[in-house]
Image 1 (cartoon, rainbow, N blue to C red):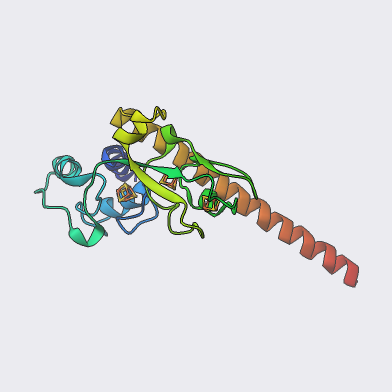
Image 2 (cartoon, rainbow, N blue to C red):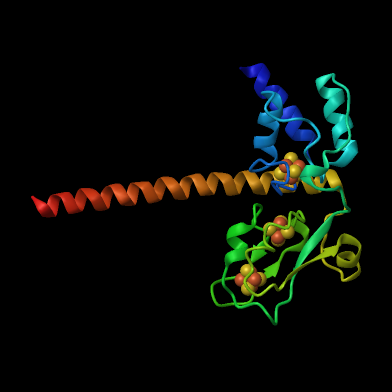
Length: 192
Ligand code: SF4
Ligand code: SF4
Ligand code: SF4
Protein backbone atom coordinates (compact mmCIF):
# COMPACT_ATOMS: atom_id res chain seq x y z
CA UNK A 1 0.00 0.00 0.00
CA UNK A 2 2.77 2.38 0.97
CA UNK A 3 4.62 1.43 -2.20
CA UNK A 4 1.59 2.27 -4.36
CA UNK A 5 1.26 5.63 -2.60
CA UNK A 6 4.91 6.38 -3.30
CA UNK A 7 4.42 5.58 -7.01
CA UNK A 8 1.30 7.80 -7.10
CA UNK A 9 3.29 10.64 -5.53
CA UNK A 10 6.09 10.16 -8.05
CA UNK A 11 3.66 10.19 -10.98
CA UNK A 12 1.91 13.25 -9.57
CA UNK A 13 5.26 15.02 -9.21
CA UNK A 14 5.80 14.64 -12.96
CA UNK A 15 2.34 15.89 -13.96
CA UNK A 16 2.11 19.65 -14.63
CA UNK A 17 -0.60 20.35 -12.01
CA UNK A 18 -2.67 22.37 -14.46
CA UNK A 19 -5.72 20.56 -12.96
CA UNK A 20 -7.54 20.95 -16.28
CA UNK A 21 -9.22 17.49 -16.30
CA UNK A 22 -8.36 17.00 -19.98
CA UNK A 23 -7.00 13.55 -19.09
CA UNK A 24 -10.55 12.50 -18.17
CA UNK A 25 -9.99 12.65 -14.42
CA UNK A 26 -10.83 15.28 -11.83
CA UNK A 27 -7.25 16.52 -11.56
CA UNK A 28 -3.61 15.46 -11.69
CA UNK A 29 -3.75 13.42 -8.47
CA UNK A 30 -6.75 11.30 -9.59
CA UNK A 31 -5.03 10.74 -12.94
CA UNK A 32 -1.86 9.66 -11.08
CA UNK A 33 -3.94 7.16 -9.11
CA UNK A 34 -5.53 5.83 -12.32
CA UNK A 35 -2.13 5.37 -13.99
CA UNK A 36 -0.74 3.61 -10.90
CA UNK A 37 -3.68 1.23 -10.83
CA UNK A 38 -3.54 0.53 -14.58
CA UNK A 39 -6.86 2.27 -15.32
CA UNK A 40 -5.32 5.00 -17.47
CA UNK A 41 -2.52 5.24 -20.00
CA UNK A 42 0.46 7.56 -19.65
CA UNK A 43 -0.37 9.62 -22.76
CA UNK A 44 -3.54 11.41 -21.69
CA UNK A 45 -2.16 14.71 -20.38
CA UNK A 46 -2.01 17.43 -23.05
CA UNK A 47 -0.36 20.08 -20.84
CA UNK A 48 2.43 17.65 -19.94
CA UNK A 49 2.95 16.83 -23.62
CA UNK A 50 5.56 14.44 -24.99
CA UNK A 51 8.17 15.43 -22.43
CA UNK A 52 5.82 14.49 -19.60
CA UNK A 53 5.07 11.16 -21.28
CA UNK A 54 8.78 10.37 -21.60
CA UNK A 55 9.28 11.13 -17.89
CA UNK A 56 6.32 8.91 -16.93
CA UNK A 57 7.57 6.10 -19.18
CA UNK A 58 11.02 6.33 -17.58
CA UNK A 59 9.54 6.23 -14.08
CA UNK A 60 7.35 3.23 -14.85
CA UNK A 61 9.99 1.50 -16.97
CA UNK A 62 7.76 1.24 -20.03
CA UNK A 63 8.01 2.56 -23.60
CA UNK A 64 6.87 6.14 -24.25
CA UNK A 65 4.13 6.72 -26.80
CA UNK A 66 2.74 9.83 -28.52
CA UNK A 67 0.15 12.00 -26.79
CA UNK A 68 -3.31 10.58 -27.49
CA UNK A 69 -5.06 13.31 -29.56
CA UNK A 70 -8.42 12.23 -28.15
CA UNK A 71 -7.46 14.13 -24.99
CA UNK A 72 -6.38 17.33 -26.75
CA UNK A 73 -3.19 18.83 -28.06
CA UNK A 74 -0.15 20.21 -26.29
CA UNK A 75 0.08 24.00 -26.50
CA UNK A 76 2.11 26.70 -24.79
CA UNK A 77 0.87 27.75 -21.37
CA UNK A 78 -1.73 30.50 -21.27
CA UNK A 79 -3.36 32.48 -18.50
CA UNK A 80 -6.96 33.60 -18.21
CA UNK A 81 -7.93 37.23 -18.45
CA UNK A 82 -11.32 38.70 -17.54
CA UNK A 83 -12.68 41.55 -19.65
CA UNK A 84 -13.79 43.39 -16.57
CA UNK A 85 -16.21 45.82 -18.26
CA UNK A 86 -18.32 42.87 -19.40
CA UNK A 87 -18.24 40.90 -16.12
CA UNK A 88 -21.63 40.72 -14.36
CA UNK A 89 -20.26 39.28 -11.12
CA UNK A 90 -22.09 35.97 -11.25
CA UNK A 91 -19.22 34.09 -9.47
CA UNK A 92 -19.57 31.06 -11.76
CA UNK A 93 -15.90 31.28 -12.72
CA UNK A 94 -14.83 31.24 -9.06
CA UNK A 95 -16.78 28.03 -8.52
CA UNK A 96 -15.07 26.47 -11.54
CA UNK A 97 -11.47 27.43 -10.81
CA UNK A 98 -9.59 24.42 -9.37
CA UNK A 99 -6.84 26.53 -7.82
CA UNK A 100 -8.76 29.55 -6.48
CA UNK A 101 -7.05 31.93 -8.89
CA UNK A 102 -10.03 34.26 -9.33
CA UNK A 103 -10.94 37.10 -7.02
CA UNK A 104 -14.37 38.68 -6.79
CA UNK A 105 -17.68 38.68 -5.00
CA UNK A 106 -21.30 38.37 -6.11
CA UNK A 107 -22.36 41.31 -8.31
CA UNK A 108 -18.83 42.72 -8.36
CA UNK A 109 -16.27 42.63 -11.13
CA UNK A 110 -13.95 39.62 -11.06
CA UNK A 111 -10.27 39.38 -11.81
CA UNK A 112 -7.73 36.60 -12.35
CA UNK A 113 -4.58 36.41 -10.21
CA UNK A 114 -2.27 35.71 -13.14
CA UNK A 115 0.53 34.31 -10.97
CA UNK A 116 -1.83 31.60 -9.72
CA UNK A 117 -3.69 30.76 -12.93
CA UNK A 118 -2.65 27.41 -14.41
CA UNK A 119 -4.34 28.08 -17.76
CA UNK A 120 -6.73 25.14 -17.27
CA UNK A 121 -9.57 26.94 -19.15
CA UNK A 122 -12.21 25.53 -16.78
CA UNK A 123 -13.58 29.02 -16.08
CA UNK A 124 -14.36 29.79 -19.72
CA UNK A 125 -17.41 27.59 -20.37
CA UNK A 126 -19.38 28.58 -17.22
CA UNK A 127 -19.09 32.34 -17.94
CA UNK A 128 -22.54 33.42 -19.20
CA UNK A 129 -21.26 36.56 -20.94
CA UNK A 130 -18.10 35.12 -22.53
CA UNK A 131 -15.85 37.67 -20.89
CA UNK A 132 -12.96 35.33 -20.09
CA UNK A 133 -10.24 34.99 -22.69
CA UNK A 134 -6.94 33.14 -22.64
CA UNK A 135 -3.72 35.07 -23.20
CA UNK A 136 -0.35 33.57 -24.02
CA UNK A 137 2.01 33.83 -21.05
CA UNK A 138 4.30 36.07 -23.12
CA UNK A 139 1.52 38.66 -23.51
CA UNK A 140 0.67 38.50 -19.80
CA UNK A 141 4.34 39.10 -18.98
CA UNK A 142 4.38 42.04 -21.42
CA UNK A 143 1.32 43.40 -19.64
CA UNK A 144 3.35 43.05 -16.44
CA UNK A 145 1.04 40.54 -14.81
CA UNK A 146 2.89 38.51 -12.21
CA UNK A 147 2.98 35.29 -14.20
CA UNK A 148 5.02 32.36 -12.88
CA UNK A 149 7.52 31.60 -15.63
CA UNK A 150 9.37 28.94 -13.60
CA UNK A 151 7.44 25.80 -14.58
CA UNK A 152 8.37 23.71 -11.54
CA UNK A 153 7.62 26.52 -9.06
CA UNK A 154 4.33 27.18 -10.86
CA UNK A 155 3.31 23.51 -10.73
CA UNK A 156 4.13 23.26 -7.03
CA UNK A 157 2.11 26.39 -6.27
CA UNK A 158 -0.81 24.98 -8.30
CA UNK A 159 -0.56 21.64 -6.49
CA UNK A 160 -0.64 23.36 -3.11
CA UNK A 161 -3.62 25.52 -4.06
CA UNK A 162 -5.51 22.58 -5.61
CA UNK A 163 -4.99 20.45 -2.49
CA UNK A 164 -6.07 23.30 -0.22
CA UNK A 165 -9.21 23.77 -2.32
CA UNK A 166 -10.01 20.04 -2.22
CA UNK A 167 -9.68 20.02 1.58
CA UNK A 168 -11.91 23.08 1.83
CA UNK A 169 -14.54 21.45 -0.39
CA UNK A 170 -14.56 18.30 1.75
CA UNK A 171 -14.92 20.45 4.88
CA UNK A 172 -17.79 22.41 3.31
CA UNK A 173 -19.58 19.16 2.43
CA UNK A 174 -19.11 17.84 5.96
CA UNK A 175 -20.42 21.07 7.44
CA UNK A 176 -23.42 21.00 5.10
CA UNK A 177 -24.17 17.39 6.05
CA UNK A 178 -23.93 18.34 9.73
CA UNK A 179 -26.34 21.28 9.23
CA UNK A 180 -28.83 19.02 7.44
CA UNK A 181 -28.53 16.47 10.26
CA UNK A 182 -29.15 19.15 12.88
CA UNK A 183 -32.11 20.54 10.95
CA UNK A 184 -33.62 17.08 10.68
CA UNK A 185 -33.09 16.49 14.40
CA UNK A 186 -34.77 19.83 15.19
CA UNK A 187 -37.74 19.03 12.92
CA UNK A 188 -38.00 15.58 14.50
CA UNK A 189 -38.15 17.19 17.93
CA UNK A 190 -40.84 19.64 16.82
CA UNK A 191 -43.03 16.83 15.54
CA UNK A 192 -42.94 14.98 18.87
S1 SF4 B 1 -2.65 18.68 -16.19
FE1 SF4 B 1 -4.75 18.30 -16.76
S2 SF4 B 1 -4.65 16.60 -18.20
FE2 SF4 B 1 -2.69 16.68 -17.14
S3 SF4 B 1 -2.95 15.26 -15.45
FE3 SF4 B 1 -3.44 17.27 -14.68
S4 SF4 B 1 -5.65 17.40 -14.87
FE4 SF4 B 1 -5.00 15.71 -16.18
S1 SF4 C 1 -8.49 31.37 -13.70
FE1 SF4 C 1 -9.49 30.00 -15.18
S2 SF4 C 1 -7.84 29.25 -16.44
FE2 SF4 C 1 -6.89 30.12 -14.62
S3 SF4 C 1 -6.69 28.40 -13.20
FE3 SF4 C 1 -8.64 29.36 -12.74
S4 SF4 C 1 -10.16 28.27 -13.96
FE4 SF4 C 1 -8.13 27.76 -14.78
S1 SF4 D 1 -18.27 33.88 -14.88
FE1 SF4 D 1 -17.88 35.64 -16.22
S2 SF4 D 1 -19.48 37.10 -15.70
FE2 SF4 D 1 -19.45 35.57 -14.07
S3 SF4 D 1 -18.11 36.49 -12.51
FE3 SF4 D 1 -16.82 35.20 -13.79
S4 SF4 D 1 -16.02 36.56 -15.37
FE4 SF4 D 1 -17.71 37.61 -14.42
